[in-house]
Structure formats: structure tokens, C-alpha cells
Length: 299
Ligand SMILES: C[S@@+](CC[C@H](N)C(=O)[O-])C[C@H]1O[C@@H](n2cnc3c(N)ncnc32)[C@H](O)[C@@H]1O
Image (cartoon, rainbow, N blue to C red; front, side, top):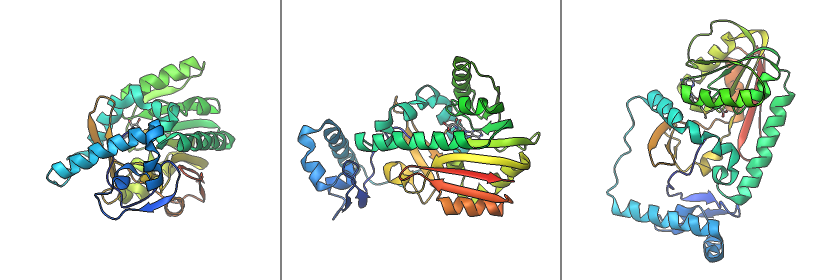
């Protein structure tokens, strides 16, 4: 999930404030840098958010016109970069769940984001998850207390920093889990009743999706359940660092450090078909109206 990255120019977009579709005429149009329609740009004088967005857009536009255009360099090892990013981001990661206006792109979308987070939480809570449960790429453990109430939970992540926060969260709830550093790509060491991944599939490159889903299947006992949550196709519109071509996104931390990570915005049909290809017997992937998708599949 993202935090306040720089703004790229967008030729067409839905206005971040009023949601109206707009097409710019050229990359000199400030609207395309701010992702605001002309009416909302005109209203910026008496609205703090719109003023902030315009200021950023002016900076980005002048940076782009001043700088000679250069191809974006890809780091040699995206996986290492992603690990370094999430390790460094651990103390600020939960802001994406807590400061919903910024995560979603403004106060209107913030309310929407909050409602859809609730919808996802209720959906996950209603799933029949029980027995031994494994959570891969658990990060700061936002979803772990909910899972730990349903069975014997193990949470894994490639970085220890977010897991330290997850541990404190579980303790604060009076809950327990087995907590270990572990690569999500590592072969399973046992079969469990349920496997969960929150916002991880979007970090799996498209060409490796089938491999990962087959690995997910190998984690499960017969009739075990795989469940996941993620950002849905379409939300790349509010991820200004996203580059759909390479399946990556540029993320910036509060201290200004930038990282390029894998980020693929999958659609529900694409994931459902991939789950069936990977050998799951039944697969359901649904979306919330704007931001998220939720999937559940039985082995
Ligand atoms: C978007 S965060 C999701 C965190 C948490 N699941 C949630 O829903 O809030 C992605 C997580 O994947 C972890 N990660 C990155 N590469 C990984 C890998 N190869 N194996 C396991 N975890 C990895 C990161 O450290 C980070 O905590």
C-alpha cells in the first residue's frame, strides 16, 4: 500500500475531489498533474486539500520541464529493494490504515476507503477459517489479531522490523502467534487448514503468479482454504508512482527515501482463473466498489 508519492502527469483521470472524468489537452495542463478537474482547480483558493494538491502539481510540472527526460533505471534486485523498503517503512506502515484521507487521495475518497476497509474486515471475519492458520507476508500484523482469534496462527514476513510491530499488536490484544522471518516463496514445511495473505499478491510479478498460487495450494491440507485481500485493478489511478508496463511502483518514505517495488494491480477475473489453473477446486474473488479485492479458494 502506498504513501504520498510524487505526482506523474495523467492524460485522462477521474478527478480526485469530485470524481468527474477529465481529459487534458497537453502535458502543460496543470489539471493532469494535480488529477483535478478544471472546476476543482478553480475552487482551490478556499480548500486546503485542493491548494496542497495544486502546489504539488506545480512543483512536479516544473521539475519535469526543467529536467532532461531520462529513462527510469530499474534496480538490479527488486526483491531486495522491496524488503529494504518494508523494513524501513515498518514504523510508518500502519498510517495507510489509520490516516485514510492520505492513503486514498483526499477526504471524500477517505470516507469511501474507510467504509471499504470495514467491508473487507467483515468479509474476512465471516470466512470459515479455523485450525492451523499461516499468514505470509504478514507485515505489521494488521490482520493478525482477527486471524489469531480463529485458530493457531503462524505469521511470517521477510523482514523482522514489521514483525516486531505485529508482535506488540498481538500482545496488546492478549493474543498469541508463532512469529518468524520467512520468505513467502519458501517451500511449505507442513500442511495447514488455512493460508492468508494481506496485500501480498499485488507484489507477485504477473509471470510468477501461477507459481505462487501453486505454492499456496501446497501449504494446504485437502479442503484447506486460501484467503487474501488486496488492492484491485483500477486503484493504480490513485497510485501516482505506478508503472503498469513494468508492474512496479515508486514509493517514498516520510524521510524522502525512494524505492521501486513490484506492484501489479490484478483484476478479480484474472485472479479467479489463475486460482483454478493452480488447482483450487472453488475460487471466489470479489471487489469492493473502489479500492480492494477479496479472494477465497478451497483446495
Ligand atoms: C503491503 S505489505 C502487507 C503487510 C500485511 N500483510 C498487511 O496486509 O498489512 C507487504 C509485506 O510483504 C513483505 N515481503 C516483501 N517481500 C517478501 C517476501 N519475499 N517474503 C515474505 N514477505 C515479503 C514486506 O516486508 C511487507 O511486510
